[in-house]
Length: 217
Image (cartoon, rainbow, N blue to C red):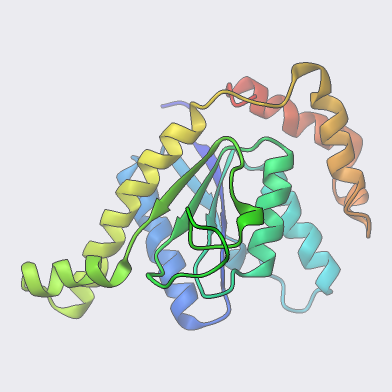
């Protein structure tokens, strides 16, 4: 098998429910894709004793270096860190999947339940799922226990995410070839606060070449 595609797995990680849900979905994505996709999960990268800017630069580096991204748009108000990472990925023409399992309506867009400023970006697939309905398919229609239904819902969600990743990965790049190096150079410079040290020029070119080698750009 060829090298797997790395996935930046962005979303909330502030409670045990977030941490457990993220871990289970990652496990299901990797297993059901036969390890075609390997997730980079910020909750496994965080260094609590580090400064906030160090953590920011660390997460932005993994977002920049990943082949694709999954961005969780749950909640009545989107997690601001996830929104920032999504826009950073889009600037780099990284294929993305927006995932929302929250059945509540939010934001000011009519077509999607989040802020319109995060809508309409190319090479972006959307997975919208009512998690309560999916969970009840397990408990009410299949007679599962709560934990069994949770696992069922997670695996069904993973299948949809994998299909969306496949579509996003095969989408046509929008970053013109003549601008690639300049865009990746700017990406290492504009965050400031030491990000250019974390990602020197040679590393930015290496990350760019890796995406070219995989046919992603």
